[in-house]
Image (cartoon, rainbow, N blue to C red):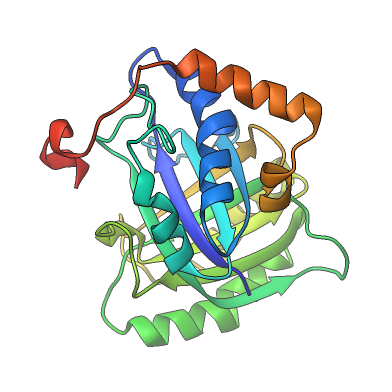
Length: 256
């Protein structure tokens, strides 16, 4: 099963257009082309539909990177903050989450190609009995959710030993479900949570639904783009200009 790099982020206030142009057509490409073991990446934004009575969700954007080794992503970021991997000053370091995850268990509704549309993620904090919890999730919650209407596949991953930055403790586990009908999937998940409440305490998990901003981009496509994609990426890089962060040190304690 693929390893994942999950990034949850927000733009600086009023800078959504700059943020998305840079992230979708500059940063994803830099990471995929420069990281050994990179497979693909896809970006998402919060969907209009969420679980009923969900608490306000703090991260509006999600990036899911797929790889066969985390160390390759770390080495690929060696040139971060340089012209080889510029970071737009529209990106907010104040509240982002970034962590590598190792696969623990996965299920798919049917054979065939993976569905790369909307996703539902559960971010779950670490707690006592973590190994028992992972086994419970894999044996009970994962199969229940992957049988729900509109859900095509799911995986539970746990925080990896290797990390690029210190991970936040509120995201020790990530469950990622790919869905073909988010309204049906969210309604069924809400009903399941009422019928069989998960064992984590209040506030220990965050569930959010995201919808794609652009199609999944493979490392091969980033290395060998079509003429149209190449022109779009070149335009975004030119538009970025010198509006970039120069490093973590200038961003304050919230960045590390």
